[in-house]
Amino acid sequence: MTSLCANYSFGNYISLHSKNNSVPPIKRNFHSSYGIRCSNIQRGKLSDPNYVTIFDTTLRDGEQAPGASMTAKQKMEIACQLAKLGVDVIEVGFPAASQAEFDLVKLVAQKIGNNIDEEGYVPMICGLARSTKEDIDRAWEGLKYAKTPMIHMFIATSDMHMKYKLNMGREEVVERARSMVAYATSLGFEHVRFSLEDATRSDKDFVYHIIEEVIKAGATCICVADTVGCNLPNEFAQLIVDIKANTLGIQNVILAVHCHNDLGLATANTLAGICAGVRQVDVTINGIGERAGNASLEEIVMTIKYRGEELLGGVYTDINTKHIFTTSNMVEEYSGLKLQPNKAIVGANAFSHESGIHQDGMLKNRGTYEFISAEDVGFIRATEHGIKLGKLSGRHALKIKMLELGYIFEEKQLGDLFWRFKSLAEGKKNITDDDLRALILDETI
Image 1 (cartoon, rainbow, N blue to C red):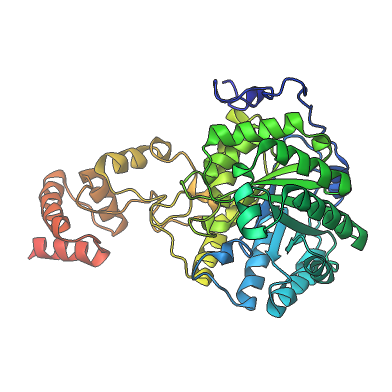
Image 2: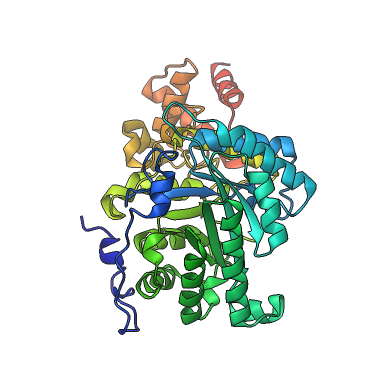
């Protein structure tokens, strides 16, 4: 099957070339200095053109969700779990925000940021900073203890943000960004990630210009942010294509994306970015984050795992997916943000079946109604086939459930029991084992 990412094109939506024909497309050099410097730490894969780096921001952007604040102990436990999961970068927090935030960043840098496993893996430890010397100094003081520290700097680039939030002109913003990136490198940061806040509502020529300047100043990773989640996948992919075609030096850095979910498209936009050549993606566990949240780690990773080879150009990650469900449960408990039951991959209903037709299929072959294996994400079923009895359940499912409880019925007995079960299920949502035993007892009396 032809890859959806072939030539970075989605049908007729994405042009291979910039509309500015005077600037030829730039072929990406995946063996960048950034990738080479990281290779001894990150299992030698950042220089692989098909390797997608997972940048987890659960502890930073995720905690910015209203009501999601966590204790330092809880965040430390989540950081340890993220390392078990195998994320490439853990963005711990915003060191300049408070003393508690600084202390946590420093602790994670010292403990988790130096814990190299037998395969040579240790996560990069990252902290957020505005483009100011004070923020950058604070970030360095907290992050410098890690084996591989990364600073994540940002500045707004849309006219709206520059006018109403920053009260700065375009050239002032460029000069601030350029000088602060240079300052960060002067302190000792080898990994300087620079994000364009509200990039998707920014003038494209200005986007190309400011990226060129921060790359010249020493940025090793450029992150394009759909800050308000306003883009559709085709236009977001086109933005990435245009940046690659029109920005000098872009071939020498890692290109990343940070997508919000205001239109429910954070995962789709992130995948569109990957198809357009992005090789670092910002995600959070359960998709938590500001307003409607961020791209979900579990959705991105499992899409790559199950469709990456076939339809995404052979991309892959190094996430240990069997830790996904445990990590999701931990974040749900500690953040207090409850998952909707139908949440993809980790929702309570993701591997449950109540319809009689579906249950019959599952009992015959799980692949009939489950594309993703529950075991792949570490989900432990209460029953072998994930069957939940309800008013839409069929005779086959009831028979199997009775067998699990130790009861064997002849067909006529099962038929009588089935209709009595259906009558019960019409008035009760959650049928328990005790309810079923009561039905059997009633029949024997």
